[in-house]
Length: 123
Image (spheres, rainbow, N blue to C red):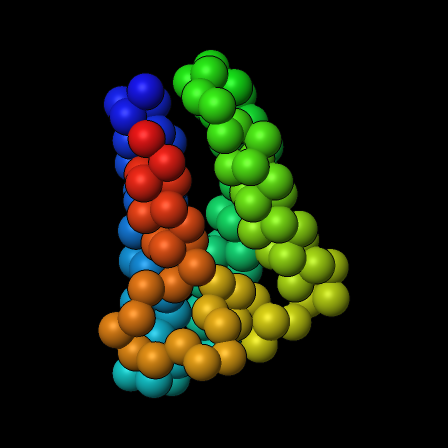
């Protein structure tokens, strides 16, 4: 059973890593290159990735057949829903804040990384 949870956690880790890479590029675009349009595009890319988590994860989770699949799918839906809302209002601030609670400090894990850890602990 642990292996099934590890697979979905690894998938979540890969998504979280992709988000971090996009955010690093966006930070460089905004603060080093001073290209606000590129920053906007990258924040939109991050948000699009998050908006598809529920859809992308649904088949993967169901195929894995683990006990807490509904709990995982509900959380993925919340990630996707928040991202879709940010896209709907086209708010770069909202997009940049996705995955980060108000009390977030540099170096902390974001919500997706924390969720991957939680899923890994289910097994």
